[in-house]
Amino acid sequence: MPKLAHAAIDAGADVFIGHGPHRLRAIEIYQGKPIFYSLGNFFFQIATQEPVPADLYELLNGDPNALTGNEIMAKLLKGWFDAPVWYQSVIAVSRFEHGQVAEVRLYPVDLGLTAQGANQGIPRPASPAVAKTILEELQRLSKPYGTTIAIEDGVGIISLRK
Image (tube, rainbow, N blue to C red):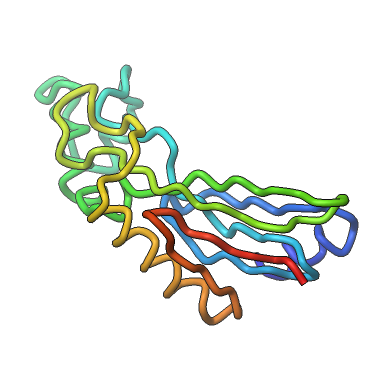
């Protein structure tokens, strides 16, 4: 992914945003431009997926005649998506000055791992404690890329001013 992201920036992109792992990944500043390797999920209402595809029943060794869609999805969630990391994200807002990214603000989002039913997976501003956890994890992930994320009033800030 870094090779692809760098190539996109080298070809003229101002920002690169990756997605796929359903969780936060590092942020890199390359040539003065942000690379978001993954911002996680913004919505994650997997528990309410209907209809459930046949291959998911096969994957989880479930009998579609014996398990409802909700039951097979609960099995999936319990086995794979049952940790906070899948339900934490950020909204990244890049501010430009004179055609250059000057600052990136990271607003923590909680998708409600412990919420019930259709309320699970809905984005909401993270509580101060969850925001701190999210931003500290993003600091840790981004440090190997040389990216410094300051935390001010529950918001992550990457300053690119020279």
